[in-house]
Image (tube, rainbow, N blue to C red; front, side, top):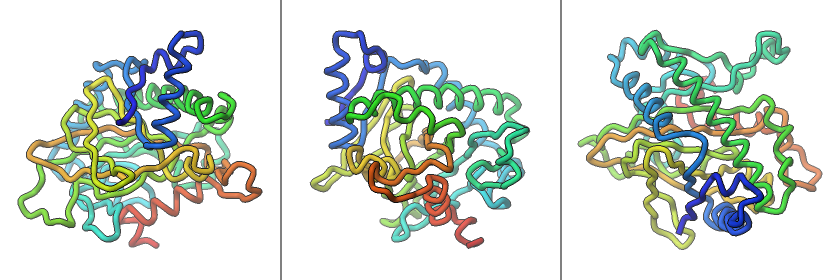
Length: 308
């Protein structure tokens, strides 16, 4: 069973249930790779507002979305149309649509001159008119919540609570709106809303509209459906944090097949600074977080594959 965590208890070390909650987090992170979280600082109203903004964008005519099509760039900022992403090379490209935005470097930041793809400029549509302020406000709240959760997770797996603090000053944090239409009539066994995959980075904070669809692979085989109402979150972990923590945190395969109802979800992929060494602690190796992310993005986004 995937542990359901009270965020207020997890974030309060003086709470009488805090130690018990840490044990549940350890189980979710180390054994299952998934948690659900409720009673956090992001409200159901916040989630409804951001999901509605993405929905209004995805319902725009194609010519409006083309103005911010990431396929015209060398990065993953803006709109990705159907079949723009292929997470499983043995499946067809995913039939969902996405909209991605990420960390914005300050105007005076010297990294701007390096044109790093993981800090690429964001693309914002003209419509809906309130899209930018809603998405940016949610982005900031989701990043802050994710960093607080990482501190608790660090404690739960035996690290100091401050372990992650200085590694997320320029986080490669990518916020995405996913739009899964009803499963198409032409879909085959190789067609998915998103095919089986593990996330690439550190921690994923997932909000949804409450529609079922997400499935998590069990360790012994088979699939577990996972849902969370608006205002609750699904937490899972990526490949980077698994090798960074020497397997004390697990990245677990998951998928969305799609069904009779459309579905919207909003994951924040919360990843460290590009130059963070995420090699196994104490190994003496060097694996730069940005190199890992860039490699995985180039294997996934169809327009980046074609540009080599």
